[in-house]
Image 1: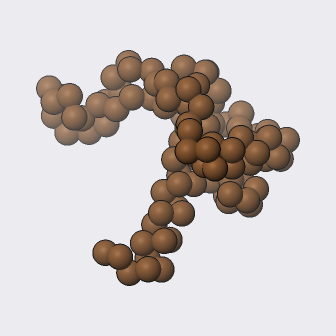
Image 2: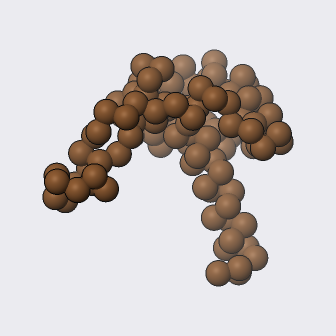
Amino acid sequence: VVAEEISDCIKHLKDGSSGHDQIKPEIIKYSREALLNPVTYIFNLSIEQGHVPSALKKANITPVFKSGDPQFANNYRPVLPTFNKILERLIFNRLYKFIEDTNII
């Protein structure tokens, strides 16, 4: 992963709730330049080792209503740490590009 990919993911974060770490997306956006090198290093290490840091696996399980019928559990979501959202988006983007380029589906 290169810093530009991470920077792009940070720019497109939605403002709003934070995970258990209490780091709001707005703070990460504001600190983007200072965070790029260390986050790039950590994410590359995570991908190379095939291991997600345990801090990114934690989530607030306070149900946040998405939409639909409030009686169904599927209409609620956990609140993930913002750095988890960035890592997930990076991996999604890479997988999506691979699937498109190789015409697997």
